[in-house]
Image 1: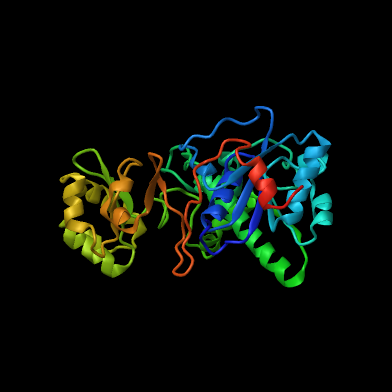
Image 2 (image 1 turned 60 degrees about the vertical axis):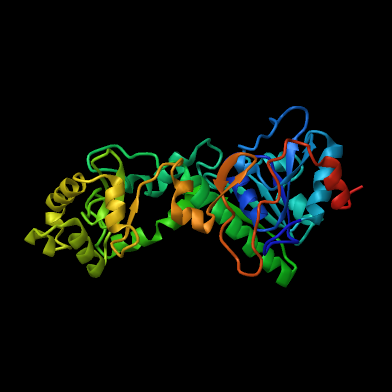
Length: 365
């Protein structure tokens, strides 16, 4: 039984990779009935509990080169509030499932298109991945240590932050508009657009003259001694983000830092020397010892945890931030709702596992 604020919303998701499936998971976690169209004929692998991004949805297997199966897909689209597809521009049109056809069958449809470069532009038909998309926006170039090459920030910024979350946001906005106006529309989600949007504050800071293209010269890029990660005596790390003066004063107190130079918190010329002094101080104790001193205070402190450690941290345990499904530890649905809590509807489904059930439930002959 579905639970969440999106209960009753129907989404058709065409099988894809990365941000499309993650968007489908987010919507399903909040109650939407997300039906994934997988390729029939062995085109998809059997699901395991570890396919976390595939959780919560039912699967129907169709051969989209068969006109009869294309018609079945269109009948699903007729019943849907939203659609997710992540192919290169033109693929859905060649399949006979493009926006013009889909919106003709369902004028209220929110047709979500997920690509790296967008539906238009000189790069729109080129291959790419998260790293390439965030490189083009300035986001990647702003991260990393001075004098070193940029480091891939996993695929959190392009695929998931700039892609899946903007797709979910865009689809829900278009669904609300369709419900009030009766008009569906295409939602063109480019990871370059989304990643660029995420950098809005930094472009504003640059315009104000308080952000430099030089790395480790800025407030939030590791340049400030009070906003960085430091190694502890046991080879682990802690994060410190003591930006506000009162939090900064508490950091100095807790770390036993009495050097007069620390009084000039915003003297950027002194940041490298002060960073070295903080690093020296933090290196005198283990990560756990620093947690005993600083965790839970207004220093703005947290230990840097591994993926194995994070689910066991007392705060995450208390909030049930992580759950376990069939032996697989994974993040719980987010965000949280006081009246309509979300939940994982089911374990990941293998391609075609619910074909007959979906056709019956969606009343498709």
